[in-house]
Image (tube, rainbow, N blue to C red; front, top):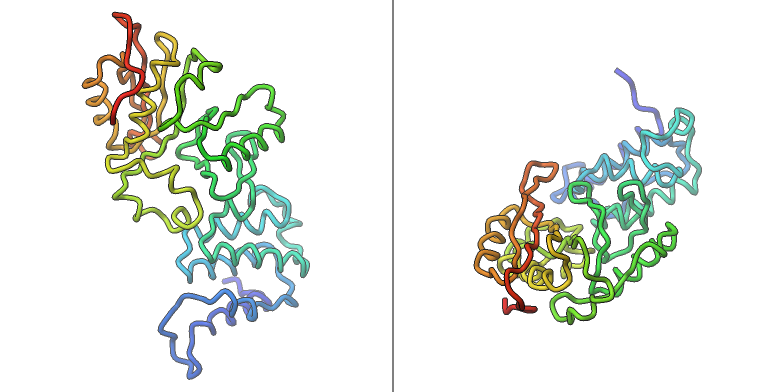
Length: 312
């Protein structure tokens, strides 16, 4: 059995002391106080990357922070200039970190203790082959829902960050970015971009009653307006589908990310609105096997005229 090195042992013992009252009995509350933690960590100890990951994983687990191991690995890797912990070389893993590096890790880890998502803490996140800047409250791309999309957004923060990322990645000549509210904007505003072959959207689709069940990281930091889809989760979905025939080419497609309960609901809604000339062509599952993606196709209208907006 491998023994803990002295610096790590001292730090872990200091961590355990935070759970004990002055008489040595366990404290009633096991949640650590980040400010007290700052006084406990010994920056004079020579800690390696592996030891710091283990230390902060323990702190995160003690505070009920989700993905404690991954959070500590991402933070330590970021401070060492690497994307992932596993990409660090043997030399980086065994070399003690400097005082400045330890302090930076502690500063970032304290933000994680406040339930700030790692993506916001690091200020960037990989999206397929691209590295995008991240700032709250702009929605975070997650691996189970990532798609190659060009989005129109109603929020100025999201639009500005998209422009910044486009320029950073030298894609500004290949993307048009428009601030547009699908719930209240006129479809004529989109005519310079149409008719189009495809509409891809990750709309607000969370049922309003489910909003309180979202992770604290989401509730505290992300734009809830990008998530709340109304009582049935379909408020914005219906707006998009009502708008789609106005700007889609015949046989064009709409791709939507939805709640697993939505495929049947969307099919029934489209059947009750035949003037839209839209139907569900396919239902795709996400990485967890849940029906989360809809392919909706426009059919060539059988007669002239179609409703541009519908009451929802």
